[in-house]
Structure formats: C-alpha cells, structure tokens
Amino acid sequence: MLTRKEIEKREWRILAPYAVKSSRTRGRFHKEKEHAYRSVYQRDRDRIIYSTAFRRLEYKTQVFVNHEGDHYRTRLTHTLEVAQIARTIARALMLNVELVEAIALAHDLGHTPFGHSGEDSLAQLMAEHGGFDHNSQGLRVVDILEKIYPEFPGLNLNYEVREGIIKHSTPFDKPRSYIPFESKGSPSLETQVVDVADEIAYDNHDLDDGITSGLIPEEKLENVPLWHNVSRDIKEKYPRISRKIRKKHIIRALINMQVTDLIQNTEKKIKKFKILSLPGVRKFPERIVCFSREMGTLRKPFREFLIKNLYSHYRVVRMSKKADRFIEDLFRIYIENPAQLPPQPAALLKKGDKYRVVCDYIAGMTDRYAIEEYRKFFDPYKKV
Image (tube, rainbow, N blue to C red; front, side):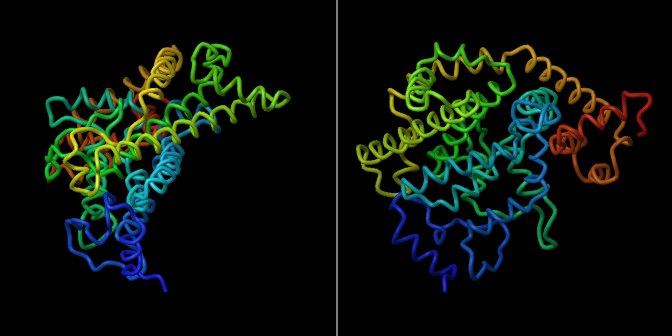
C-alpha cells in the first residue's frame, strides 16, 4: 500500500539531493492533520484544482478574449500546458514533480480578466492604495479569498507552494517582496522550472493562436531563425501534409527543442557549480534553470517577433484598450458608490479597505462577467 509516509521515503530515494522533499516542508499556516495517502503537495495540487479561482481561469483571457472563438487558449488551458511542460522538465531533473505541478496550476490564480492589460489597469488604479500585481493577488486568493473550509480562510497551502506563487518571475511577471518571503535567496528549482515552463508555453502557444487567427501570416516567420530551421526540417520530412498539421508539428518541435535545451543546460550548470543541496540552490546568486547561450540567442528574435507582430497587432491593442475602459469604469463606479456592489463583496466593506475590496472583486471576474457588469451599468436596455 502506498501511503503518504511511503511516498516521503521514496522521495529521498528517487529525487535529487537539491530537490524539495515533502517531509521537510516548512508547513501550513494553520495546523492540520495530513492525509494518509497523499503527500502534502498532492493535497495542495488538489485544493488548487477544486478552487473557484481555478475554474474561473476558463473564461479569462490569454491573448484572445473568450468570445473571439472556441479554439484559442484561455488562461485555464495555458495553465494546464504550463503544468504539462513543467512536469516533463522536473521529472528529467529529478525534482519534486508534485510540488512543480501545484505551483504551475496556481501560478495564474491572481490574474485579472483581459490578461495583462487588465492587470496593468488595476496596477495603475491601485498605485496609491497598496498596489496590485497578479503574483501578490494569487497569494491573496490562496491565503484569504477562497472560502472553502470552516476552520480557516483560504486554501492553507504549504510554504513552498505559496513561495512559488509569490516568486513567480518571467519577462511579464516581476515579483515583489512579500512577508514572509522577504529572503533574498533564490527560489527552489521547482519554482524556477515553472517560471521557464510558463515562458515556453506562452511563447509557442500564443504564436500558434496568432497564426490560427490570421493575425500572423506564416510567411512572415521565415525570417525568424528558430522558426525557419524547424519549419524547413518539417517540410522536408513531411512534404505533403496540410498547412494546419504542419503548423502543429512545427510548434511541437519548437517546444521540444527548447525543453531539451533547458534540461541539458540546467544539468550542466548544476554539475559545474556543484549544486548538492536545497540550501545550495538558495545561496546561488542567479537562476540555475535556464537556456543555453545559443538557445537564448535564437529565442531573442523569436520573442521580438511576437511582441511586434502579435502583442502589438492593432486588433490586440484595440481589445486591450477596450479592456482598460471596462476595468477603469467599473472600478470608478464601485469606488464612488459602493452601494452598487453585489451583496457578497459589499459585506466585506465593513472590515476591509474599500479600494482593496473593489480590487479583489474586479480581479476575480472572468472576461464575460466583467463585460456583463459593464453592460448593466452602461447599456440602457440591459436589465441590472
């Protein structure tokens, strides 16, 4: 029988010495009796999946707003893809896969409706009222805002999962200092794996959606070395397949190439700098999980292409500006007259700061709910 105790023993036999071991967790904020057959990180993963915030990701924007089509990524499908990529990397490096999966599934729980444009709007609106970023909001979600258990607020996750949420770092995500995570030490390798898996997922899958939408003509990519090399190989191997299938094979090959480079380069770095323990990871002054210099050089024009041709495309910019208006107008209306808030968030005004209550309410909205609320206020023919 595979009990939690046996899972913990297996970790010490199978995982690398620098991996996080569930038996050495720094624990939960609120004391609980642990499960007989699930490790602490399995339990955290399950709590995240069953949370309201996780289900809402289905209707939150990745690049394309949900109503633009059924075949584009949402924040939920993106999250699942990050988890899948991160598991592969973690298993190859002999890290704690269950911790990696929990962090990956939770890394976007604090995201607003309408993607990064919604986050930027709330950050500006909250600049003088405690600020806003989706890492900190994600921690608020799992520590305070989820209401599931009668004994305590939030999900009561373990320290290492919460650390992975607050220290999540990519070119789009800049972590802030946050008690009790003020340490200047590097995050665990499990956290670092999720960070890079996030980059791999959104780079390649946003590109996939951009081509599918017609915003990016495939011919333009022939000037991008990373795409050109893989595309050429796929065309030589499968000269008669359709454009649609060829595109899928190219995206798949791009991801595989980057994941393979990341694993091999990280392993080299671990050996080179003699990383032999978790304290050794935390003391190391830079990220250990990273691409080779050669892959970094190839990825740079690839990412620049995405910024210029997808994220700056006039249709994406229009949707972003529209999202700004939705967020800003809803925020202003609720702040000026909190009596217009529905009963549940309105009840929180008795104990909480008005700005934070409104911010939490808007950040938790899905795209379609935010649009529906906006219509109730500004469409004279819409029932309120």
